[in-house]
Length: 65
Image (tube, rainbow, N blue to C red):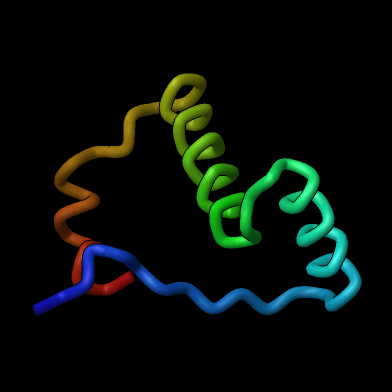
């Protein structure tokens, strides 16, 4: 059975990641929850300001991303 949680590897500057952990802790979140929150906010703002992401694009790319 496939997981409903996608996994993503992030490569970034170690000091930036450490600072990100500080921000997450300040917001009483794990780094994972903080990043999830930021991604959701970014996508939501994109869809409000620019365009709704087409469902056909999602379906085409669901298996490849």
